Length: 543
Image (tube, rainbow, N blue to C red):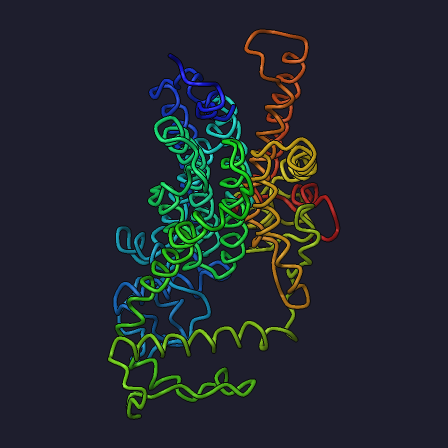
């Protein structure tokens, strides 16, 4: 005799059923398409990568810091004319014997160092890691968008949009930290989205085998490999720049919301509280604790040389600013009874206090030509000039300017305008779709933009720059891909809506491509006459 209907476990939620019934992607097609887009991105980023042959912008810090990490395990100071000697081919005898005060963590610099190890201490060597990372970021974008939309075509659209953004292109061709930050953040979010799918499938299996139970099926899922991978990626992101702490917190809350929704879909009452009880501690351990361990481990070179740092910075201007306690020195007795490792960790904590003091006190009154207000970043309010060679006379370097005029070369950190402005409109739609239509997928770009953009509003009284918005860009692209999916519609066969949607989306992609080609010269140090350059400066604030 069959069991009464009320005793049967509830059916899996619609999202799980749809995923089980969805035709499996052909791995060859899906991965071949993703790799193809990534290879295109890599080609564009490697093209004449060694030009300009100089330290561009903040490469003067990070390229030398990376080489120092590679050779000594920690960052050291260097002689005054180190840049000129390095560009002439000299890489020895330039570093001092004492540590240098650095104000950003080490992961991004270690990634730069990998390229220097493989290709040498020259512009190509210190930029190639950024180029490869930028291409890998495009690959991750294709796969993440494909997972969110269920469409390989829309996944490739997202990858192409990221590939054809100018800000992403330039940062993938410079030895700065921000492209590595954006990469690890995107990897972390991709892991969380995969965990959402994986966890819901496991919860459905638990319900089918053992029922819902009082606290819901989540109570039986203690190990979540994708969530653990997300914690590792978040730790590497924070280990590149501290600004990754905000997305870590925001997406941690989003994971809780996803788990709560899954529990509720299986009929669990008081799902919010019960999810916090049975899932909060494991999720916190997978994300926050793992990220913390990875972050501390990323300072391994520093910890191995903690004594040298203590001697060098026991009385720094940062430790005394604001009444902080001075650093413990190696010569002081360890009154706390801590072991050597614990003492090094305590010194690292003091070092972090000093760096935090530097960021919060010593930059307030400074100014920079290219600083901008974060409120205008989505509209590309103020680009950053990375390098410029001005007043190239006619006849020099192939300059064909008329007499009385000149040519120039420039590298400018500026996003592709059509993409960013269209992405801003798509973001507005994403908010409506997430809040008003309760489509969970749109929560990913909304939370991503909010956590990578809004915190900068707290620091708009200090010099901050448009290229920090590279962490925002992936989520604008996801908003565009999801919006494109809505425009095209779910029907696989031709309909008037699908035709109109494909035309609209295809036209937008073509506009982005044309816009990308138009600005290419000012992203890649190409030769332009002054009149050609002026036609690319669409607004006076871009100059």
